[in-house]
Image (cartoon, rainbow, N blue to C red; front, side):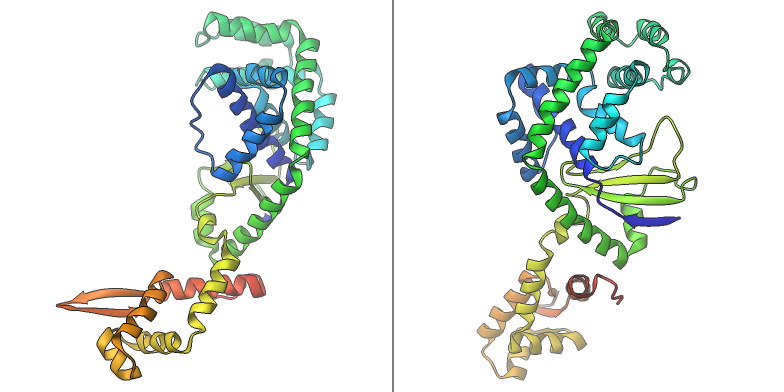
Length: 354
């Protein structure tokens, strides 16, 4: 099985729509925001809502309440690997038949209200009357929920126009910020790819879980700023595809450690660029030692050694061990190796193995 990294812009577009829809729902229905988004994503989504008209916010919130607005584009993207951009997504949406569109509408609504698998849905999902009959029989739906969902089916052209209005409105909001979003995601993709090259086994253990991957020839890994966190397998529920997409939220398990990699490497080199600190590290690489012994060996005041050790400790390049009344220092090998790996990933693409 082959694993490759590639940025797919439409995932940011689709996840952003989901975030926007949830924010609209919170605003209109007075719900508490429990999404725990990172500050950059939260600020961006707040900007979407601030710039949107109240009519767009109301319409988006209404569909989102039924699980439809935000995740509809995600479902379309998962079912067609050829979709790359938001324009591709809109082109697909406009060509959907009523049966295809309302398979998504009904399926997403049922998933929102009911935890049942709804295996029978696959048998009837290409017939409008059968889908309506099925929704009528779902016990998990409250009467008002049932009526509102069926209303979408009774007026298919109106429903399509309302969704088109939501997507057109969101497109304008998204495109105004698209460059910022894509720049963040592309930069993060390089970091994740470097992490993968440094430790493929650990990367797969961290991210490629809860999925039978044997039936796929290739896994494509995408990093999404607007997904923010978490891991999502973007696989089709309708048809088998040889390529499986995995989308990882930018603020994933390893990203926070490496997001400021260039700044971290600069600090790493600056700290070790001092001759005295480098001598201390060389002494501690062979054996642990305490301040007075280091000061005596280097013919420096203990206070000076304390200062340098504090600086090294700030980057966790040394660790301490208390023996009796003395505090011994030694090189923190893993942190030093991490600094060297980050440097190698910037200079030679992360291929250097230690």
